[in-house]
Length: 194
Image (cartoon, rainbow, N blue to C red; front, side, top):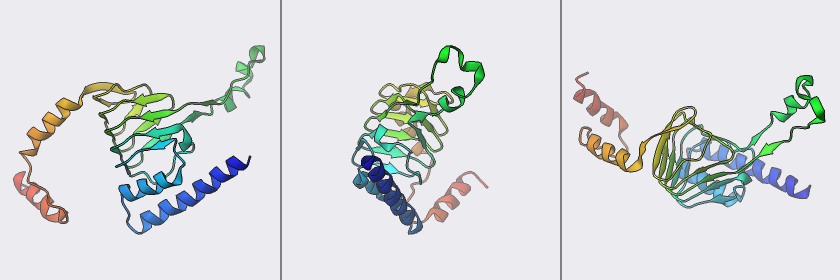
């Protein structure tokens, strides 16, 4: 029980640090460093950008590789609590079967981008060099070099094709220079004739 108490204490301290970092304007790389130092995750790689404001409930079941970008409001679901309803439902209590608490791991490879508002469910492995489109629900493994999207996910391309499209599209847009987003959007509106 001491290990559980220590984990809860570490979670509370880490959450307080994350909230403080948000209040003083720290971005995803600083938040990732707080999480890496906390030791809460099974593995937390280098050069990780972690934008969500909350810590998954069971981070010890999550492994994050190197050069991973996790955008805003990504949810990690490491367990299933439907057993609580099923075990108290007379319709499913035949034969004295008892449904168990189900937990599994989430394994994220290297060079992965997870778009905003995605949900990553337990028992999945995301291979190296993958892109998860925003709003996706990842319920099955993602093969290496894949671009996936949807609910549930399906393969919609390869990272090589995505990079090719990004390079071609970049020539249509003005170069963004850090610091002045207003000037950049002014250029975009002028290009579009608005």
